[in-house]
Image (tube, rainbow, N blue to C red; front, side, top):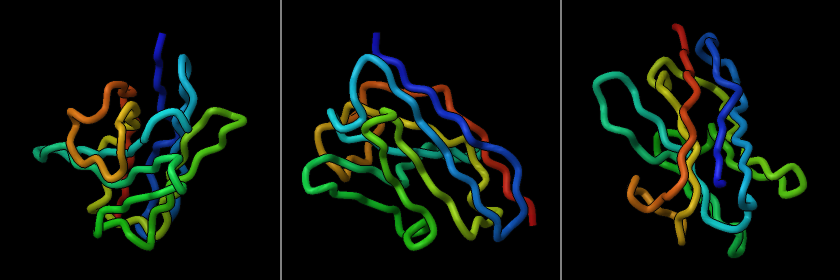
Length: 124
């Protein structure tokens, strides 16, 4: 059974850092393109980063470029999102997704497997 589970969310002050983790089972983190999405209250879910094993290609949405870093640990079968210099506008539910065939893949429909999400709250 394919499973995806996020962890690492929490509340942090503006300028702080968090690292989100996404553990998977039933497949390996380098088997598909994997991505991070987020959804703020009242807004649509948006793609913020993805990674694919082909040349370790990565993508970042402009709003997080230079502050967030996506990476994976194949031995631990875990995907990460290091988030630095957090801003109040980064407050959202963050989701890990897997199963896309390419990166960037910005549409929800490109991903087959989703976690339940982890809440990130950044206070000013």
